[in-house]
Image (cartoon, rainbow, N blue to C red):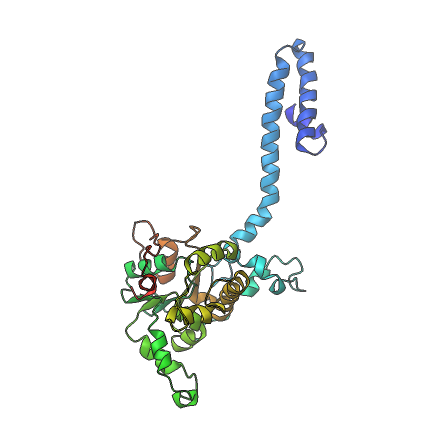
Length: 329
């Protein structure tokens, strides 16, 4: 009887409920002359309508849920559409429908490098270097601590001494070698480092990939509109034109002090560049700040057993000596 009432009703929640109540109210009167039966009918109709509405909502959401749950490829199942969601509103020109994908459902996959890596991953625990290539304020400090916990003890964070290495380079870069002029100094700089996070090394992702094709890369992410206010609060201090942090920010964002357009544009461009450069088999995306990644995801990617404890939730300590916050920890 309830379902017959609902079928008789026009589409729409209020109309469905009213029609169901009316139909059931008449049925009650036929049975016992009305009385309290109308109230019972109303509650029953309301309950059933909510159930039908929820079922309809689930049915409508299911295609979207399948997209969210969909994986990048058979060899990159650790990357899903959800991982790319932070960048989709800013990547519209890259996501236009194509003849092969007229609905645009699979457009997010085009943001990644799905080509096989030049060096195949061997079975078992990863024993090479790990580079955290997300920009500051995306959970890089927490990632560094997690890498140390998982066995990459010689891990640096925002190692500004790299600029000393770059300063020592000759003006004529051709003297450094016919291939990549930064290859030799970067390899020397990273000789005693198993893993790194944050700037400035995150800006050298193509060079790091070329130097260490067996390395793994972790891109810590965050929605740009949430990232910039956080970056602005921390990066508002002017250290002077001769300070390494000044160079760091100018190199990464195009300006030494926060600017909404420049910084957000650089943040988006960096994320897209990493996603399109690093083969997806060697890339993990983690939204640490948003709670979208932890030891389980990182451990599975590195093929190590994760500890049974919360993922580090670390932030740079408040201090007047702000340079120390960004030095090697």
